[in-house]
Image 1: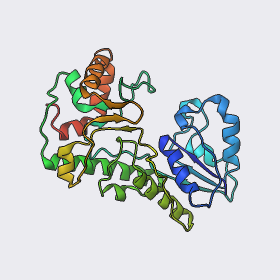
Image 2: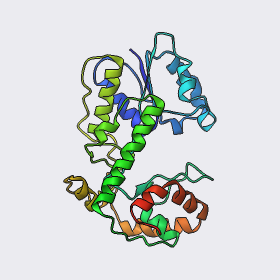
Image 3: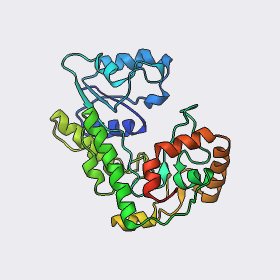
Length: 278
């Protein structure tokens, strides 16, 4: 069976895991945010030939291209199958890490590492950025993160992964799951298709190119034991200095006050729970 998996960076890892079962054929597809108009010929032809289409929820006309979930489903043969998987994000062990898209340039990442830190964000807005959340606050933060995934699963009819997040898995970053989480999701896809077998992960972490620090207080509050995750670490470049990240991103925010306001609004619930702003 030809299996086509469409989504962000998590999609290719999911495809590899599904391929490991021997049920499917397939090929790598660029993350959906990297697809361009020139790709639509081969890409849409591949979708039309798919026996199984696995997608994250993608809005119609995403980035001006016909790659939305409903648009792709409409291309399938009547006997083809479709499974939706959630876009996975979990910040329980990294409660200050955030993804914020600049309204003026959604493709823009902050400097040094492509993640925002809520402490740096509120510091740029003039608030105290050295809070001391309670253990309950850290547990609420993790519960909020899981609930957000659960809501999206239900809204889009996606396979359920939020129950696995209740085990507080140790990810590389808030949107780069470890192999164990991705394997769990791939198994849920197989279950949804009624297929036997178990996905087998490779002997390397598929999304482990960049490791963010795990917050020790959050880990303690959640009863998670983690070693060797106290610094930013790039697989190719090595350790990244936290002071360098903070200084560069503060300057980045000074030049983009609208982005700061947007981030404060988008993550207001998290910021309030962690006691980052008054």
